[in-house]
Image 1 (cartoon, rainbow, N blue to C red):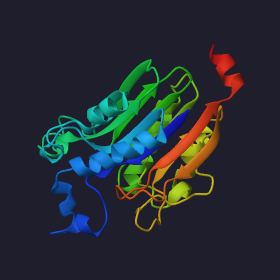
Image 2 (cartoon, rainbow, N blue to C red):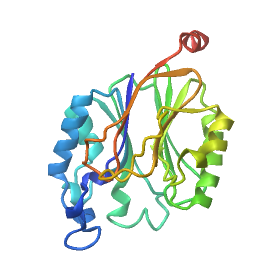
Image 3 (spheres, rainbow, N blue to C red):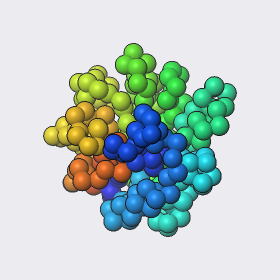
Amino acid sequence: MRLMLYNMRYGTGSGFKFHLPFPFGGFFRKTSKNLDSLIQFFREQKADVLGLVEIDAGSYRSGHRNQANYIAWKLGQHPFCRSKYVQRSWWGRLPLMRKQANACVCGKPVLNQRTHFLRKGVKRLVMELELDEVVIFVVHLALSRKCREAQLADLARLAKTARKPFLIAGDFNAFAGKVELKDFMEDLRLSSANLSDLPTFPSRAPRWQLDFILHSPEIRVTHFEVARHVRLSDHLPLICDFEVLPAAVSAGA
């Protein structure tokens, strides 16, 4: 099975032009051209599951079109998209912000899909996708390290409820890299698909490993890469091929 994780930056692009005519001005531009390039890349990679962070769920920026639904339609797959912010929060009430979302797009049969909100932070959405053999969690954690520590504790408790082998994929915003996730990974007996600790941000000159695909012991990674040639966002995409070990499949039968 192939899982791709990508922080899309709402399809707004990257590079020097993103900061014209003023810093971060690209956040307010229309995204249709860049979205077509993203879809072409997704089609070429043939992922069974896309974990997409920073999706536009239908603001003026995307022509009031939900990018996750559009991507799924173009790929012939199933979309699962939720706003990143709690509805009753200030962020969830602002016109542009409430359309900022995360999503999963899946080409495999989906048994269940759930959303959870961690107790702390502005960015605290966790998406849970249950497939036949695995559970996949997609996350986008806070910028504050202290807040992330509390979020990781909540996330560990949530992951322990999974009754199948599982993966946790997302933008962890962990500027200290895997060192920051040491206790979290040990508690859940997780391994990183990125054995070489390749950096994922910023895409133009990668320096930090902010994006991770972590997996439980019952999963074996058969291929992993950070797509260094793709500059459609400020993050790089992660591509992970994996299989569930036979003993785990038998135990779950």
